[in-house]
Amino acid sequence: MPVIESEFLLALRADDRKHKAALALFNKYSALEVCAAAFLEIAWLLRSKEKSSTEVSLTLSLLESELQSRGVSEIPVTASQIGRAHDILTRHAMTFFDALILANAEESLDRKLLSSDSTFDSTGTVTRIPVR
Amino acid sequence: MRNLSAVTRIRPRYVVTIPRSLRKRRNVRVGDNVVWLPVSDRELLAVILPSDRYRVLADLMSGIELSREARLAAEKAYFASGARKSGR
Image 1 (cartoon, each protein chain N blue to C red):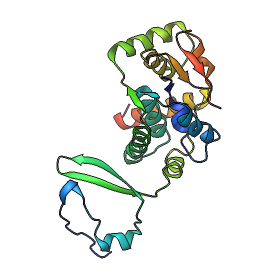
Image 2: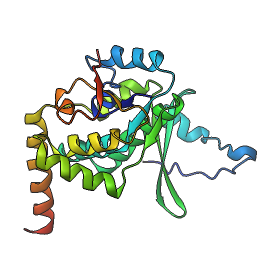
Image 3: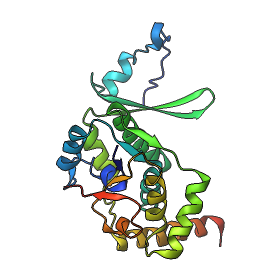
């Protein structure tokens, strides 16, 4: 089943330009997985914008609730993935969260990642399906 | 502000009614979302949000971007904030 990441989570915003595409993908795929690392990145981005801890908790709760209601399962972040992310970082030009999401997505069943970010192509370990 | 505190009993299947005084004062509507955030062992923060989750998410995540520039700026702001708090 394909994996979703931060871009997809942001596309759940009503005013996001990929909002309709994200909802269409919910209908297209009966089963999806989400990288837990994406929640971490969203929380980090929110805090960097000076959002309060309550706002971060609310956002994550709403995202989690929405995904659960759609039957999306979560791929947890593990110690080995964190190690793998650092290995990816030494070999490829990407941010830490990209590397962590990639390491996270490599644990999925069929290694298909729903993302428009071509950075994820650099390792060749996942097949990317653009969100559009 | 008038004291709006009230006590309600948890009924079977853990159903709780939001007291009328709070419903009226806060304009709570059927279909709104309630997000329960744990505060401590005996405290929960119940946040009432409008029924349109996608609109609420747009408000909560306004201004968030995923471009490389935005991520680098976020990293800088995030760690600068941490350094300020720790006095370093």
